[in-house]
Image (cartoon, rainbow, N blue to C red; front, side, top):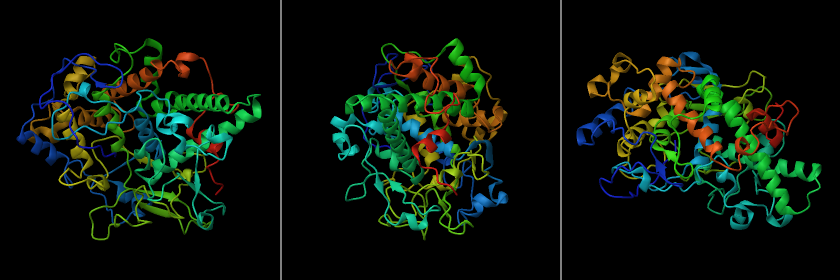
Amino acid sequence: MTRHGSMPLGGENPPRSVYHDQGKFGRLFPTLPPFAGDNPTLRAALKEIGKQGGIMDAKDDIDDPVGLITNPEKSLGNPNNPNLTAGMTFLGQFLDHDMTFDPTSSLERQQDPETIANFRTPTLALDNLYGSGPIASPHLYDQTVDFGLTTFLIEEIPDSGAVSRDGQPRFDLPRNSQNVALIGDPRNDENLIVSQLHLAFLKFHNAVVARVKQETDLKNPNEIFAEAQRLVRWHYQWIIVHEFLPKTVGQEIVTNVLTNGRKFYNWRNLPYIPVEFSVAAYRFGHSQVRPSYRANFGAKPDDSEQFIALIFDDGRANSPAPNDADPNDLRGGKRSKRRFIDWQTFFDFGDGRSRPNKKLDTTLSSVLFDLPGIPGMEPQSLAQRNLLRNLAFRVPSGQSVAKAMGEKLLEPSDLADLKPFVLDTRTPLWFYVLREADVLGDGKRMGPVGGRIITEVLIGLLEGDSLSYLRQDPEWIPTLNTTGDFKMTDLLKFAGVVTNL
């Protein structure tokens, strides 16, 4: 769901190197050829496959955002996934922004991934949250507490208490005078949900700082920050290994990789980001996005004032204007009294209020075919952008990757809708792993190719980080509660962002 820049790096047809270094993108399978040669006919075919109203468009009734949530008949062409709640989609987006940041690659020119710098350290260490720390990124930290050395800055949303269920004020990311969020990664203000998730992590860190002050003898602000940061990172990493991955790929693959090791994701110096992961397998979350969400329940006990809206609404006659301070969709970069999240919709707190995300398949919600904020003549469809990125980065076909991994290949009949484009036997990897999830994972979890790539990279990044809990203390268990486990619901409650409804 994130728009990247359009400045190309490298030559028109750069070489395919088998080497990779820290801070660069690379390849899991450097000797495999691209799924097809770049030419105008192929580009036209990919744009046809991913176009608005095309074979990947769910054709949702976007004139009825409430019905898309409450009326099952509205979801027949875009089924729900009963195994995953709506919030897991945005946790996945948050993880992506922690691992990678490429503001320079182009959809229009072929790219050697090893010429593309990853401006995010390839670890799962919450760089998108902490920036460069309190000294180098002081704008992220509250200068009124501990000399700005321990605590994140957050801001109250004016008048939000009047529209929240408990009457208490709600909070937002800190913003400058032009409403630009002051955070470690601007992409985490792309939509209201990931923006409020970032806020939840800020408040989680602040709550952990308070716990460290209360339960340790540490007095030096630098030491307090370091210990709180370690606890926040380790509990976050635990959630990745013990909740996000098992729900996304299945416990069997996770256990296999943890027990028997990685087969395909290895590195020469330090971890890198494979393009088979970043532009293909890990873009599975785009299939999970709902067209509309219930952001919050409003002030009244009968839910009559709940805030329900499309995730994005662009290009229609009644679409919000770019300068609208409180648009009728959930785009980010805005602040108003109703723009906050009640997390009971997004994660399962056992009260029956959570909603599922969408099935893992090659159908995307219709709102993703007309993204806001895309400049000029660039494709507005997220599906087109992903397919063209697979071409620009010369990613191998799903079939060749499956064969290289020793996994069962999808039959051409499983991809019959691509036969008119001559792509049913040499399928772009992003499309392939989504269809594999639908055919072999019943749309509930990733299949063997996509699941293995995702698991090996996420666990590999943790194993390659000398400060992660898997490297420092693989037998460690969470310490912020007494259950020996820690889930997203625990994090949100500890952060104090879960309202009693």
